[in-house]
Amino acid sequence: MADHALTHDDHAPTPLWCECEKPLPVHLAERKGAARSVCARCERPLRLRLRLA
Image (cartoon, rainbow, N blue to C red; front, side):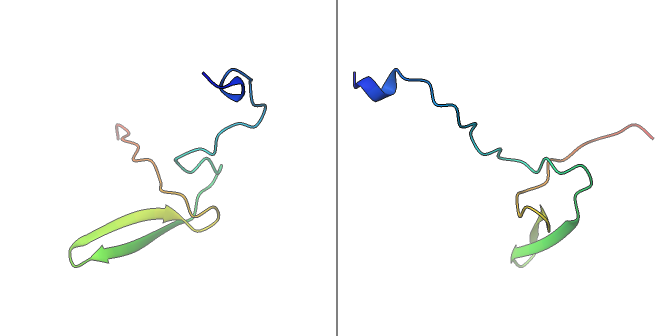
């Protein structure tokens, strides 16, 4: 195993999902009938959150 694999890196990994306090959703169409929602501020995908109404 390489030495660099055992050292701890202080840099946190980039989050996969948007972590903005108030995201601005934008819907992007990838192909006909399929769209995904991303944040206009950080350009990361929005996590789907289900809430009881």
